[in-house]
Amino acid sequence: MLALPTLLRSPGEFAALVPSWRALVAATPGTSYFTTPDWVLGWTESLGREQAGQAVVAVWRGEGGAAEAVVPLLRTRERLHPRLPGGVASWTVLGTGPGAADHCGFAVAPHRHQDVRAWLASLARRRTMVFPHLDAGTGDPYLPPGAREVERTPCPVLPADPAALGSTRHRQGVRRKARRLAHDGVTFTWVAPDDLTPQVFDDLLRLHRLRRETLGGASAFDASRRPLHAALAARAAPGRGPCALVARDPAGVAVGVLYGFLWQDTFAYYQLGWDPAYARASLGTVLFHETLTALAGQDVATFDFLRGAEEFKHRFGATDRYDTTWLVARGAGGALLGAKSAARRVRDRRLRPVWRES
Image 1 (cartoon, rainbow, N blue to C red):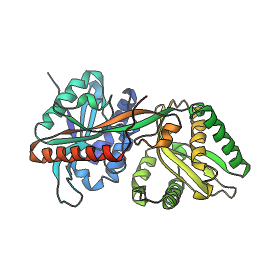
Image 2: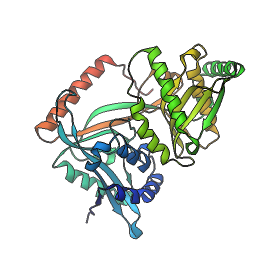
Image 3: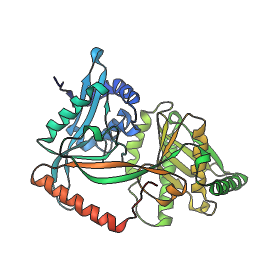
Image 4: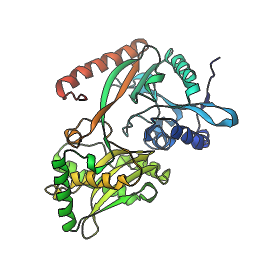
């Protein structure tokens, strides 16, 4: 007989589950930082605070009370258009939306797979589901019947080894640039998760803004994101959580920050900022090289660029993996969401290059 989960709804219940939840995520192959309680609850307490009352964490427990499957969901309203009020009542994965989570999925012990699939299928009979940026291994296997792929997002990855950074000629050029920066007094420091301070994040925001102003165009990464990253830093521990590679000028002022998350054997690159005064010195490229050098001695196997098929990622030698977004449409509202997704895919095919694995 299939087992039903216990449904947790309050912050106190979520907090009590964290140690067992984190241990389950660590024991589940293929999980990302975005499936940990650190990210999910950090997001819920900050960017998702207004919707926190609609969060539901389904948990299946084994003997002794240890979590054997954890499925965090959010009841929300999926907008048909930014200018239209309301939206379509939907289930989504808790921790997605603003903040840009990738490789979303669930920590599930093998003997609980069928329980999770059946429970999600029962929810999907009554309400539309929009599950964004699911990982092929930890998200897709639990999709309800009738789920339709509405988006496929490239997420390039690279071995966490400076020797893997592009061609031999490219690596030689980067090393020359790094030596020139060192000659000019620029230093590079790795800041581990347990050492990350609010000042590092503020430097990242400042430098990211400077770079965006020089390049032109808007960015959603601004001071409104600070509460999320403060919550993530508060849950960090050695080898787990937000971290950064910081470049400083001879006066000790931060002139470049490459920021991301450590989880298991993967570093997930999240954001970058650097002083445009160092553009001719290729500081941005050197930051990637120095980050790979710092990671090489930390048992990190993969440098994950996360979503986006920007040309520089492939120039560095990264190869694409893919996340997928799925829709389970119910009723007229679900049908409208399906039509919206189809129209967006047509538009994206016209406006964006198609990247394929070689």
